Image (cartoon, rainbow, N blue to C red; front, side):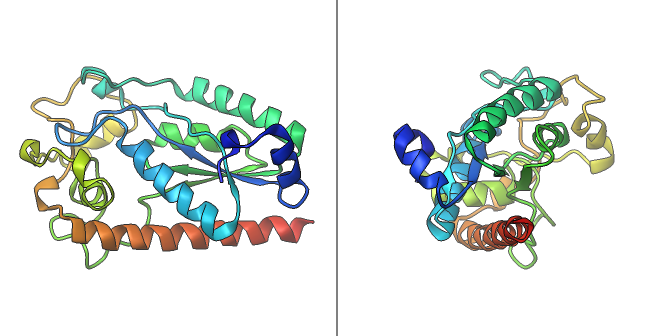
Length: 238
């Protein structure tokens, strides 16, 4: 149930019984040589669709841009806004929706850049809760990694399960920067390109669709529990 596919009268009718909205946030970001730039957007839209069906909640239009690592600016097609601009822009959208009667926004992101997440959380702290989709227990699924990295064993597995035709398997390359060396890039202190990096961090050569099926199932469960828990919090305030 997408907001932008309804008329304004139909949205008004929805608001008579539900003042909450799911908002997917994607990116236009390189994902190594084997995954498309809209990888985050594809996954977050798929998850939003599932949550909408399960909770009967409206899904807002997907925002396809976010805050990316400065060191990635050299990968063709990748584009980013700043933390301050994302906060202000997204906050301005929420202001209009709040004036129309919406009271709670469940924001979904498949992009773990800390500046990106902070901008979304700060856009309207009173009404926004943010979920990073890959922040769930992957124990027993991954073989080469302990958790999600970037265009890695985990993320590539999910894409192989959901969008197999979009994965360029012949282009997969493993590459990993030790965390202590990568941390300055993650927090935007280092902005130069990582020497020799194909764009991904981790081991996508270990990915497969069966792992992706299990991971996406866990992702759905974790997200639905998060949504229902926060929905109950909202109801308890009334």
